[in-house]
Amino acid sequence: MHDTNLLQLFTDDIGHAQRLLELMDEEFQALGERDLARLEQLLADKQPLLAQLDQHARQRSQLLTSLQLSTDRTGLQQFAERFALGQEVLERSDELGELLERCKEANERNGRLIRANRASVGSMLGILRSGDTPSLYDSRGATARIGQQRPLSQA
Image (cartoon, rainbow, N blue to C red):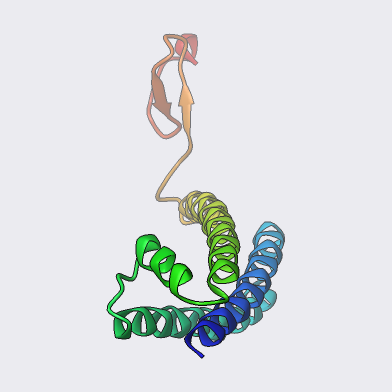
């Protein structure tokens, strides 16, 4: 019974992680297009998946703890030795781990794009507000501000 429950949790989470990865790829595309409506929908779609992954992780930990096993890989290996479906549980655990690692990488990629977009928009807003002027280089290679007075020979 424990092995079928644990196997089902892993199997469900593999499906959730695959869907989450698809959504993160769509999010990357929407970020590139700056499609805010689509980004909002993707965020709404991701929230229940993340909540389900978290809930199942707690349930797996509780199940292992109830059997007096650690909640890490060692505990899972000990579980596999005790139960008939143990080897399949280990395989699903590895598959889920790989998917979650890919989700983490996709999330970091999206985060980099968000930071780059934020910097770009901030720079544009600064120029529009006339508070920030873009930096240029003078003949010596030092940065010069547009608003500074300097002789034409140094322009």
